[in-house]
Length: 85
Image 1 (cartoon, one colour):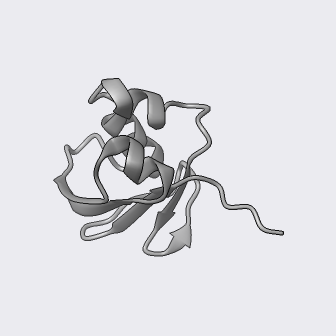
Image 2 (cartoon, rainbow, N blue to C red):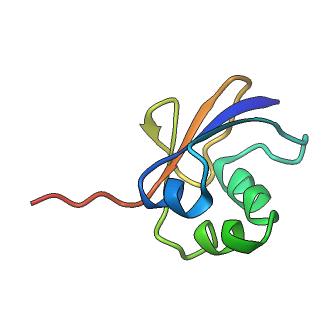
């Protein structure tokens, strides 16, 4: 399955990347699976996207839960939590 992954704010700075197209293995079917897949890159990826790190995910511009399923052509965004005043 092919998806586009976007990284915003401090994640973009930490990872040095704002966007990438990925061809995922069959084992990656949910938002949580994708996060683990990216963590497996090691280094800053493992630290920035680690379980417990304050990171939100959206699929096709809608906030997603870890169990939300991916689909062909999905736009997946990772971003830090946003607070307002």
